[in-house]
Length: 502
Ligand code: FPP
Ligand code: ZN
Image (cartoon, rainbow, N blue to C red; front, top):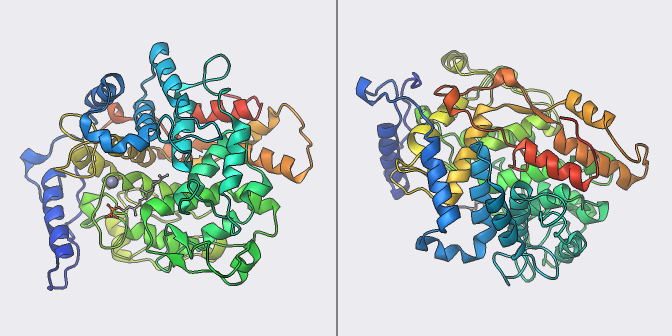
C-alpha cells in the first residue's frame, strides 16, 4: 500500500542550478513511479517483488555470460560473481552442484600465486577482488575436495595483507596503489571470515578509520595521505588527528562503520587504541541522506546528490551497524526535515538527544520504531528500483545491472529484517565452544571475541516489516559481511574450527 504522508519537495532557494534542476527532474520521474497520497487511484499498483524476473536476469548472466557492455568490468570479475551469487542467496535460490563447481573453479583462477585474488586470471591481487572472491567462495564453496575453501592460500594471503600495511594503520588496496576505507573493509571481512586477524594486522587501523570521519558526520575515503612528511603512528594520530580526504559518502561510510564494528573486539582488549567516532553526528548525517520528498524513500550517497538504489544498502545498512554500537532508536524514526526522536548512547553520542519535534513525531508515528523510514525505502526499491524486464537499478529510466541488483536486494533485506547482536545467541555459541576454552592470551581472547561478535547477530522477528506481503520476503543478510547468516556461519565456523549450534 502506498504511504500516505503529504508531499514535501526538496527545498529550493529560487536560484536554479544544474543540480537543483536535476533534483526536480528526478523527483518528478520518481513520483511518477511511486504511489503517494497525490497519485491517482489507477497508479496505485501493488508493491510486488518480481522475483522470477530477477532470477532470470541473474541466470542469464551467470549461465550465458555477461553481455558485451560489461567488457569494461574485466578487472571486476570477482565482483560480477559475488553480486550474482549473493543476489541469488538473498532471493533464496540455491545453485545446483554443477554450477557451484563451475563457480568455484572460476573463482580459483583469480587467486594470485603470491596471495590474495585479482580481478581476473593473471591480474594483480587487490583487496577488493579478494573480498569479492572470498565472499563468492563462501556462497558457492565448501570444505574438502575441490570445494574451494581449502584451496585458499591463507598464509600467502596474510603476507599479502601485511605487505599492504602502512605505518598509520591503513592499507594500500594493492601494491603501488592508493589507500581507502573500501580496501580496509574488504581486508577486515576477508581476514575475519578466514581467521586471519591478528593484533599486528590491525594495529592502528581503528585510529585511521576514526580519522576519516568528516565534519558532516559521515566518512570519506581516507585521511591525509600516508606519504605525508610527518611520520604517523597510531599514537600521533590520536594526539593530532589528520584531516579527512574529501567529502563524506555513503559507500565509504558503510565501509568505515562496518570496519569499526569488526574492530570492536580488538579495541575492547587493546587499551592503546583509544580513538572514538562521533556516533551522534554520524546518525544525523545518515538520516539526512534520506531522499526528499519523503515519499520517494530512497537514499542519496552524499549531500545535494540524487537518490540511488544502491545506497539502500550502503546507507540503509549503516543504521543497523550503529545500533550494534549501542545507538538505539528510542522513540521513532528521524525525519530528514530535522525533527528527531532518538536516543544515542555509547561513544561521543553518550547522553541522549531530546530534540523532539512534536509535529514530525505525530506525522511519522505510523512507520515504526526505527531510525529511518523502512517502509518508504522498500517502496523505493519495489516501485522505482525494479526494472520491468528483470534486475534492479539506480533509478528509472536507467537499466538494471549486476551491482544495483545486489545492493538493492541487500538493501531491501535490511529494510525488511531487523538484525541485532544477541547476548543469547552469543551464549549459545560460547557454550558450544570446542577447543581451548580458556586460551587467555591476548590473541586467543581476540580470536574468540571476533568469532562471537561475527556470529551473534539474530533477527528480531517481531520487528520484521515486509511491504507488499509475505511473497516479497527475501533472506536476511549479515549486516557486516553482506552474506546470508547461513553462509556466514558455515565459513566462520569452519575456519575457526568451531561448532556453531543451529
Ligand atoms: C561516487 O559516485 C562514488 C564514490 C565516491 C564511491 C562509492 C563507494 C562505494 C559505493 C563503496 C564501495 C564499497 C566496496 C566494498 C567496494 P557518483 O558520483 O557516481 O555517485 P553519487 O552522485 O551518488 O555520489
Ligand atoms: Zn548506485
